[in-house]
Image (cartoon, rainbow, N blue to C red; front, side, top):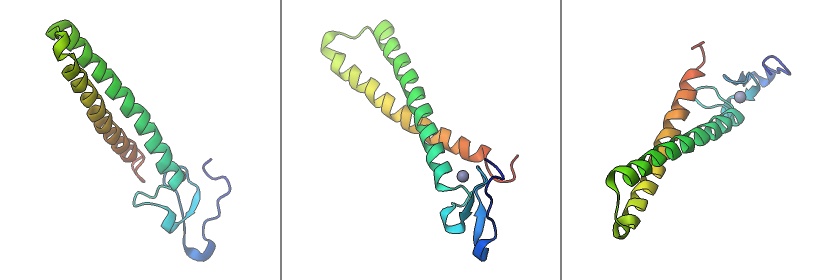
Amino acid sequence: MRGVGRVVGDAGGDLECGKCGRACRARELDRLLWCEACIAGAKATAKRVGWLCGAVIAAGLAAWIHFVQKPSAALMGGWVGVVLAALWLCARAATELCYGVLRILRRPGSS
Ligand SMILES: [Zn+2]
């Protein structure tokens, strides 16, 4: 989409999005010059990747608990809680990490 429908210069306040190149009002861009659509897209991507990473890690943890710890039925609830907590924490951390990486990779002038 770069270069399509460019209207830079209108009222002197327009800038190009640093990611998609769409002309936007300066106030619509954040400090890395991304438009709202690109930010939303990156957040959605980061969320998908983050939950995927969280699910993989939680599955690995569940397998480790199941095969190595061999929990008794009485402690099962606690282990399930540990796995769910790990899933949530890892998903959150991986989402933040992925979003940060996406932003750094697309920083203006970095290419
Ligand atoms: Zn954009």
